[in-house]
Amino acid sequence: MSKSIRILFVDDEDQLRYLVQHQLTIEGFYVETADDGDTALEILKEKVFDVILLDIRMPRMNGLEVLKHLKNQKFISRVIMLTGVDDLAVALEAVKSGAIDYLTKPYDLKDLIRAIRRIVAK
Image (cartoon, rainbow, N blue to C red):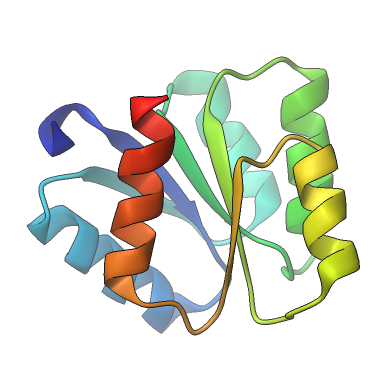
């Protein structure tokens, strides 16, 4: 099942992007990355992904702004929000804006993989 799952991982932390991309690739997922919301939206103009892993706090365009743009443009990708902020109000806003799941950093890789597989199976 993993081989066909296409993931866009959007986070401004270089080391985290590399680490997550590497680990998810080992698990058999196809993973591309973007270092900010603007770059992610440019990639999404050209490519389709099953899942978008989207950090909330990023420079220029934060994850909630990207999420609202995706919702307005009716993108079909499922979004998991990732953040270092454990804030219920932010989580509720993310879900209201279209996110399917919300994980707080640092998250366990097994939890992330479970979340990806769960939302793709829906």
